[in-house]
Image (cartoon, rainbow, N blue to C red; front, side, top):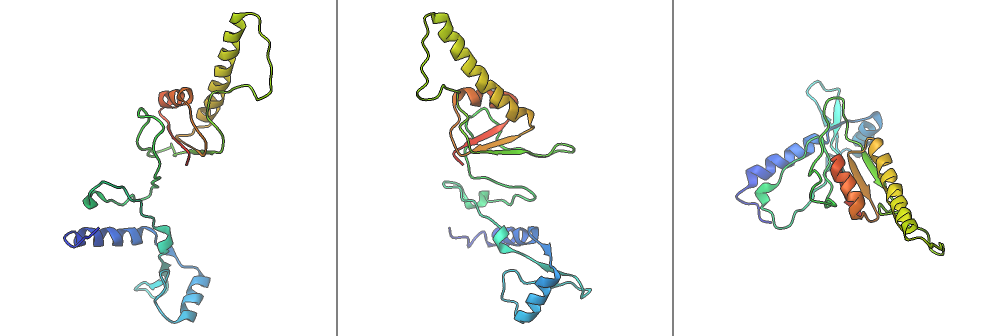
Length: 184
């Protein structure tokens, strides 16, 4: 987008973003910088007034997430945090998680389906009593609940999975106040 009128806003945003990735330069970084002899590099070290400490600013550590349909003035820097461009699995889940004193944010990254447990393919069960079918379905739901309970008991605040999440699992996550995103 054209940012002519908002150039002051975006210049401050860009400077703040670069300052947020400031790192102490190592001896190898300084030697490499001196050997290059130029300051063209995006990761160039800068001399501080005392003449001893140098820093580098890795621009590759700055990421821009685009939100279509929003105003350019809605842009903001997330300092000390991380943004993920993924949708919550259900509306009842929180929209963000912050760490507080003593409580850190724990993220569970899973490569498994969070769906109701079903018997495997090729398994044949012969049931004569309709009540037995209900007990089987109840046990399938209990297995799902136990699986989700283990994730919750591990202390996860955010659950990211590469597979699907069904309604039953989402219900448990909403009740626990956990953000869950599927197909990340």
